[in-house]
Length: 209
Length: 185
Image (tube, chains in turn purple, green):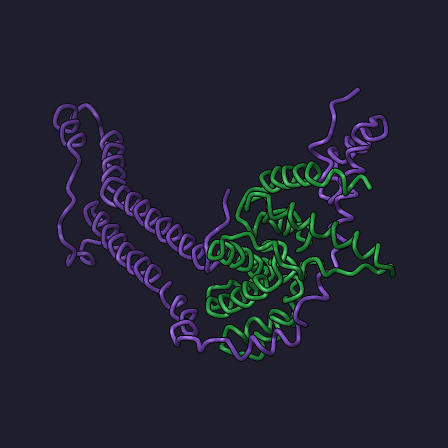
């Protein structure tokens, strides 16, 4: 005989089982008298719960609601305005992120123009930009050691690598790390918000064993 | 009872959140029968249950701004009600099951004998429920008297569904032991 299903009989009786578990319990019940007796006991217990006639003893709902309305305390103003306040509160991280995006865009455009200017393009247009980026050490060393042997194509390739490397290290890497910081900031804010929200769901404590 | 959030309820909650007492009273009228049944079985005393229920609704009113409209109002209310009942019991630790009101349950069948038997059964059931640990009692009462699904109980008490199931099994097995004579009749 298959293993008894006593632990699942309550859930079965409550209609909470589905799929293979439900079929397994039904199949087992057909062949196991002990589990059928157990189920019958649980049914008798459920009948006792449903025999409860206490409803007649309680204050009628209408009277309760009327009495309650008289006893409800006046709500503090902050309680009503908190929802508006909480949505406005969200503007802070959004504003900080928007400012960061704006600053980064400005720096990226500025840096791109500067790099193009360094590479020989946009000479007259980018004259106002600061001179910050020259060449990498690899570029200078390679050019000084193998300058004559590289040829024009080699030098152009080295120059392209140099520009790409400078661009990535000067602009993309800081942006990546700043994006990580922004994400961590948002994750922290979200965690804080969820915890705060959870605490406000119930006025009392959570029931735990 | 099916956990449905009707448009009417959503509107009532919204109006109540803006301070409308009438809307909240209507919500209280709708949910009172379910709440009092649960709280009564948690407390085991009708007067205590009515006080705890009133306190639960007042707590709900005060904290209504924190209720998230996309969640179930009934589950939120039941959580507050269970906590209010437990707080009420802690404030009044002596056994409250000397309440004769709980024994005044009448059977549909006429005759004094049936009435007495039913009173005794009800009294024993209440006593057995009261003897359960709070955690198991909360789960059992929400299931049997609140008629909440396992998922809803899990949400109300903030425990996993597996824990809901194991606590229910424990509570039922314990009640079966305590009520062996009664259930076998």
